[in-house]
Amino acid sequence: MQIVIGSDHAGYHLKESVVDFLRELGHDLVDIGSFNPDPVDFPDIARSLCQKIRNGEGERGLLICGTGVGAVIAANKIKGIRAAVCHDVHSAHQAVEHDDVNVMCIGAQIVGAWLARDLVRSFLDARFVQDDDFIRRVEKLAQLEEEN
Image (cartoon, rainbow, N blue to C red; front, top):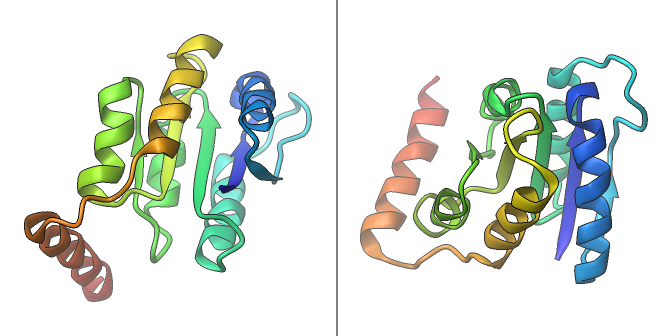
């Protein structure tokens, strides 16, 4: 799978660990930074990552910041992006299965490298369930996006 990954400075070290894991799994990566622990603004990273998802340069995105909260707020401002903060394995797969989430946000100050690996694997292995209820709800999310 083509994955776009990015982090701010608070997520830099965890992102590097996740990048190594994704390569071990054989995924193609677009790493948009940050490339060191120097301060960077998470909205800029979220914008860059989400534009790549929207443009088809990646199937899914991973954003890592301190808590995942700032990243998910920023990502969900971008049309066509459905982002979720996931700090447990169930949410990581159900977000895709029920809500067709295309960007997962992780808090590096909340989860460690081992849990992050499990979250990433769960998120990437999941597929949107083609159930009428889930399809209708995701369509309603798109309508909300168009209204605002």
